[in-house]
Image (tube, rainbow, N blue to C red):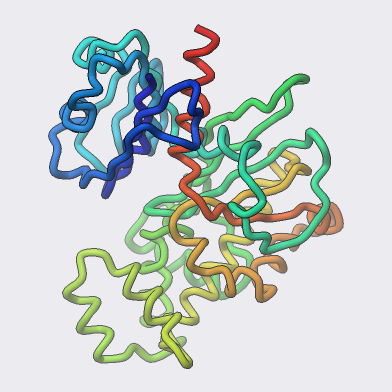
Length: 330
């Protein structure tokens, strides 16, 4: 059996898989609060329980680069190593994947009902595909055709320099440069980025802040959910929060278009992470698509590239797909 997991700073999903049942029908599955554990091994031991003797291999995805089988997690004080996992858990093999690389492994296997198209286009058979995922941070990955199958490649492109697309974004960059010597896309296009945009729009007088919301935000450990909820509140939503989402969607569209150019993603662009599924109407209203194709001489090429939002837990699925494949090939 394979133990697979999607390791997050807030929560971790673990599941046990049998080769005959495949990656979509886990034998057991559970969710854990990551911060309650001193490391991944103790969490996995608790999860496996009576199944421990049956587990032969493991595959876990983590947020951050995996170098020589080792990863230091971005949002947890954990260091995870393949060799240490094998030794403590009695496994024959353990594999660590970057979380976006895991999503990329899932992309060719996603069903139509697990996707929401936010920009139509015509995917080219065997064309490269790009994955971008605004969550707590901003992840990016891509897939290329090897001649017989797609190969999923990790990236840390979400930390590339933020390139403003208009005067408002130029002001946003200057605003953030006061407190950050360098501003990458993750600072403005992620869960941590939304409050940065909100603060800029508030402080620059683009829209007034609601006193009631300001009081809520002052008490919150994570302001992002409150900003999103206030923007989406019926019937009109909070004006400052709506403007924050508008700017966020435009920046996401621009960076998704940048990634499509960098890997020539004629096979399509896929948006993962926890934020995009909540913003489908905003992603479909034209702001995202306009920023995506606004690439000068390459606008026409980008017009033809479809963009889909992933509406399933693709990272865990991808880790299971890759782990089972490794078990079968030895």
